[in-house]
Image 1 (cartoon, rainbow, N blue to C red):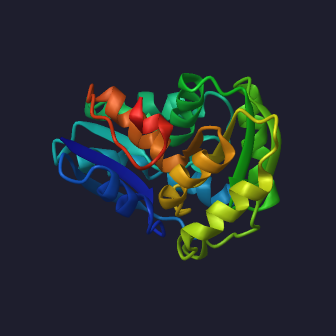
Image 2: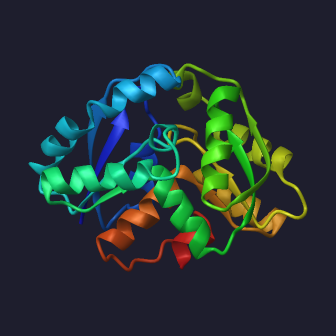
Length: 231
């Protein structure tokens, strides 16, 4: 099958992680829309470019289109992800997934209501993310970011950074951990974290892939990247 991804122009992680997770049974086709800094202003400007990128991906006859930006699909609140998916489907005729909505759906599938969140973001974006999760009836026990504003810097971080941050934010009463940001390398750490902490760990990219597979009615089970993709 063919996955279509719309990613920020400075994202160097999502594409690579999708190729690894879907190796041997799918191809990944990417459209880029301009974003350098993870700020509210740039995220809003990026969404304005979304439809043109989606139409171009439709020319490749992809099976499903993912809007691959977590903060960019939640900053306007609970319904933004659904609206993004609707707009893309209306313009292209192709099913769509927005990362933030995919995360909520994944947490629901895993029955996670009490959550700890690790992000690379500045505090303003973390506050928006916490509000979004709470609007979706998720109790955020703790959220911590790295305070990074330049998206290319996020993409340069080793997966060990996400691993250490996830362990730092973990609280014993948590039912799961969310590693946020499609540019934050983490898939190598997910199985290890689940083994050590005993709770499901979801990243922006595993949630997006899982949701895109469901939307495209693909029933593959993927091992090595967390409980979610084995469901």
